[in-house]
Length: 356
Image 1 (cartoon, rainbow, N blue to C red):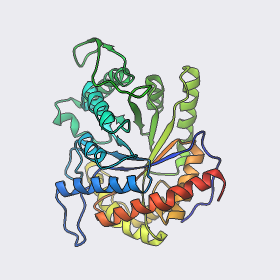
Image 2: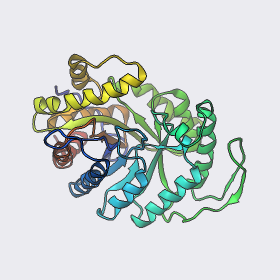
Image 3: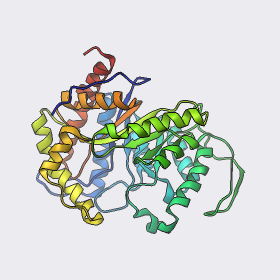
Image 4: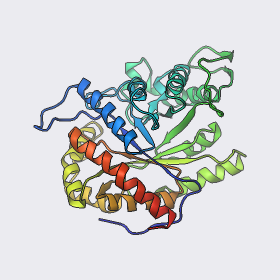
C-alpha cells in the first residue's frame, strides 16, 4: 500500500493534527454506546492526543443521529481543562446557521481559558440539517454564509464591527468581548471543498484555507493551491498558511488497519449515501482509495509516507487526519491516536526534513 514518492518540505514546519465528528461508536461487544459516553470518550481521545505530541484536535458540528457532537465548543472547553499544549478547534463550525458574533465570543472565551490554544474552522458544512433546525431557509444558503463571513472576518481580528446587509440589523463600531490577547486576533480557517469561488473567498476575507480532501489523489487539488497563492499576490494579501484534512486509520500493519476500518467506513459511507442517493461502497472501491486516494490507512510507515507526499505536493502548513470514521470502537481509536503521535508524526518530520 505504501507510496514512496516524497517531495520537498513546505515553507514552514508542518503541524499534524486530528479531527473527529464524534461518530456514534460501539463497545467491545458491538453494542451501541450512549451519546454521553461517546462525548466522554472524545475527551479522553483528545487527552491522549495531547500526551503523545499531536498538534491539534478538531471537533465537527452535526445535528443528526450518527454523530454525538452538536456543540463542539463545549466539548473543547472540557478538553482544555485536561490538556496543556494541544490546539483546540472545530472541523467545522457551520457559520451559515450560527451567529458570527456568538461564534467569536465562544471561541475568544475558549482562547482565554486555554491560554491561546483556540482555533475555529468555519464553513458552510457538508450537511444541511442545521438550517431548518435553527430557522433558516436553504434558499438563503449563499447570502447567509457571505454576510456572516463578512461580520466574522472583522470580529476575529479584534476590530470594532461595522456592517449592514439583509439577514440582520446593522452593526456600527460594535466592540466585542472578551478581546483576544494574542496578536492578530482569533486563529481561524475556512473549510473549502474545492471550488474556485471558495478559494477566492478565503483570500478576500484573509482567513486561511483548510482543504477537505476526502477522495481521489490529493494531486488533483494542486490547481486550487496555485489559485490560492496567486490570489494572495494579486490581492496584496500577506502569505497565509494552508491546511488539509483527510480521513484515515493507523494500526500495527497495513492489512490490520484496512480490515479494522472497512466495516465502519462502509457503515458510515452507506448511511450518508442513502440520504444522498449514492450507491453502496464496495471493498474494491475502498481498497483503491486506500492504495492511491485520500484514505490514509495503514501501518505508521505507510501512513507517514503518504502524509509526507501530500504535505510536500501541496505545500501544506497543517495536515489533519480524520481518525474517526463510523462506529469503530474507542479502544481501536485510542491505538490509532497513539501510533499517529508516537510513530507517524516523527516519521513524517524525518521524511520532510530529508533525514530518513
